[in-house]
Image (cartoon, rainbow over all chains, first blue to last red; front, side, top):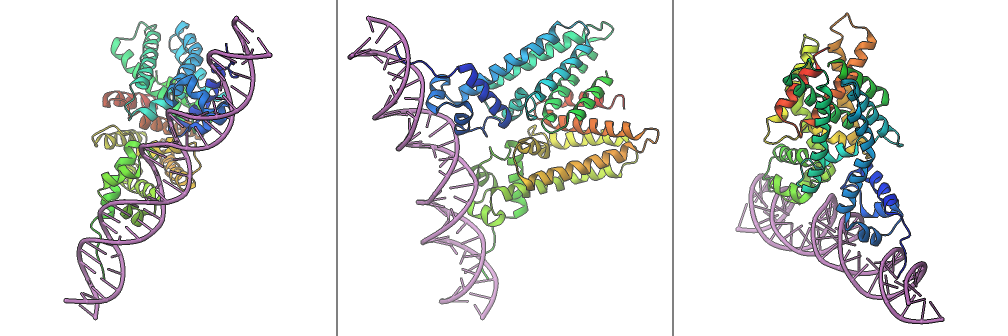
Length: 187
Length: 187
DNA sequence: ACAATAACTAAACGAACGTTTAGAAAAGAT
DNA sequence: ATCTTTTCTAAACGTTCGTTTAGTTATTGT
């Protein structure tokens, strides 16, 4: 037939994801993406349609990457202790890479909170709702708690997780671990 | 001499501040500022130099506006209870305006955390350092606490405040008040 | 070997960005 | 009333943005 692609799509999406993760959507330009992904603008457009499509693909990849730590939480049988471990796992997977970039999903949530982007809002909400459901599930393992307490604690933990992700961009690992310990002290 | 200005500089800065507050620095264009401030680009440039100068002026105005709630915290004599009230005051002054825009300083802190802008970094750090010092001062009112506990609790409260500001952009007032109650439950 | 087809390169597109500038309008001083 | 000085209007500046397109290169099936 014809010539074959000289790049692996999943590989270049990963590079794009890291750039979006570090800089956000608006600040990341096609020029930067070209350089980072190592392929031409034409190739980006033919593979992903446009910048927005590439961003959605990056989000999808990120979700896939964090799904294992989320699965671990889902499978746990130790209630609150599982949630605490999930907090630690989230932070550690963020710190694995060279620079503090926080959580890609939370960064996106913040950047797009005032914009009207249905695709991205939907991706965000589905993830958050899923996380909330899992957290409630874990909290319900302690059968002594009533429904109101569980709702309150779930909301608290979701906000704490959100704040943790936002703060992990600018704070040290020690400060963040102290924070996690304090968060769960109150439960 | 000559013609007089047809606008009040403080008034137009306030309008600019609200726009920056809502949209962030990059997303707010000169065209939007023109419209919102009700004056021409020429007037903006002659009064504030450039977009960056106008942003700094907006930050300064915001700091002045929150200084009274910060002063209230500084003057308090009830230790942790003052800090808790400060959290409530911060949230309520954010919710006074029509839409959840969070804390302008925290939004800026997040947007500029990966950029290299000495002026803005300096403004941010001075504010954060000041807040941390005040919080430590309040915590020290409980003389039974040792230094290590105070440091840990201060870091915890700073992150909690940061997270609160970030979350207040997307969460309801009820969720946020539940969050504050939980943060201070065991301190 | 050759034709067909897809992937690549690089230049250009219009639009929007922050910023500047030339000229018209207006108000105080003489 | 006129001159001077400053504000204001509006058009244009050079860049950069995301996106497209014409033309070249390479690879596969026959």
